[in-house]
Length: 113
Image 1: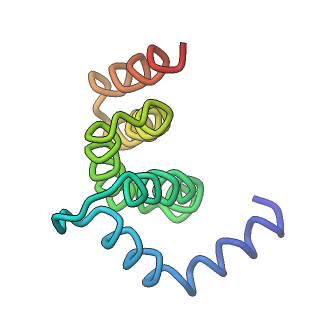
Image 2 (image 1 turned 90 degrees about the horizontal axis):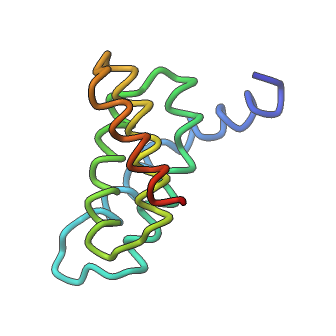
């Protein structure tokens, strides 16, 4: 990790509670679920992947990815589903689930091609 990435991670450390609040809002099933909230949940969860991996927060990451993929599937966001499935594959690997890891990655690749 270079100095710039460390600085970014320190900034995220300071804002992590706000980021979690934004993720909770974006993934909440409040009856007014919209494609905009779905898009936000996928982008935010996806953008946090390097941070969560660097900070060894994979369980938290996996929870948010699972929430985001449910929303992505509800709104049929193909690119979002592919991105989050790839992240879920990394989660499965971190959890030692060598059965689901390739399943997630293959599903992600199938969508992309």
